[in-house]
Amino acid sequence: MKAQDSPAAPRRHRVSRGAPLPLLVPALIGVAFLVLPLVALLVRAPWRSMPDLLTSTEVWQALRLSLVCATAATAVSLVVGVPLAWLLARVEFPGRRLVRALVTLPLVLPPVVGGVALLMALGRNGVVGRLLDDWFGVTLPFTTAGVVVAEAFVAMPFLVISVEGTLRAADPRYEEAAATLGASRFTAFRRVTLPLVAPGIAAGAVLAWARALGEFGATITFAGNFPGRTQTMPLAVYLALQNDPEAAIALSLVLLAVSVAVLAGLGDRWMTAS
Image (cartoon, rainbow, N blue to C red; front, side):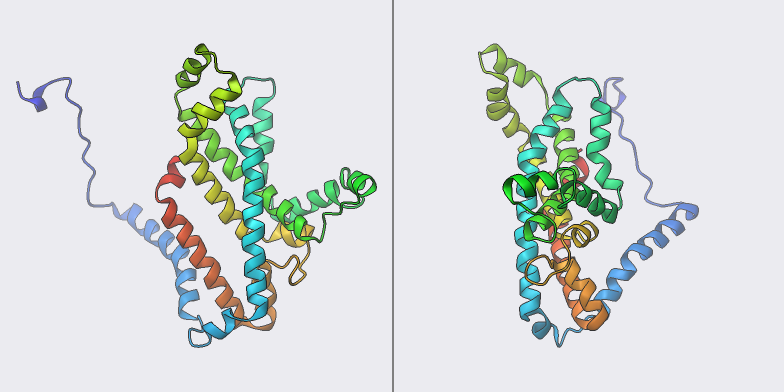
């Protein structure tokens, strides 16, 4: 009996090369809607004056601050978010669905609302910020540390979702085998689980970094827009758009190039991580 006649042989589903017109037309409209603004940005870019625009002191200050703060926010997200993702994926506890919903809320929450919420919590008169100011003399709003806090607030859910999805896809029997050999749960997590989910952690960290780099609403609300201290690249784009549109386009192209590089580096992992 031939392999293709065997009932156990897997069936191969053929994908039609053609597309029905009712699906093709709206799909092409969707592509044009998403791609056309990016093409327009490239067309209207001041390529001749680009070197002068990108070598100014203000641009380099904003770029350096953006890279430093996005990296710091990603580090905070890793330290806090990976254990949180493990808790949501591996531990059954009352209210887990509610905790997951609250953790992922910044994904759909308007960033400006997130900034206001951070002010109410960590501002000088905030619920926790008042204690930080009275006890330790620490003030977060309108500081570089405040930029890191705002970016971590909006970026951490990307990391948590990515790592939790990877943990759920990983076989828990490896951890159980380590436990039967005498390893504690933390040792199993450190020696077994982390190496297994490292690609998911890396993908989530890159997504979180890219989200932090492009954060605007929560940053300007909680940290302000002070050049050299809290003015990141998105804030510099917003300010330049009012005074120097060509500089705004040049800065936008830098962020566009970073975003394309991130997606190219991730490949398909950003779609399969969760």
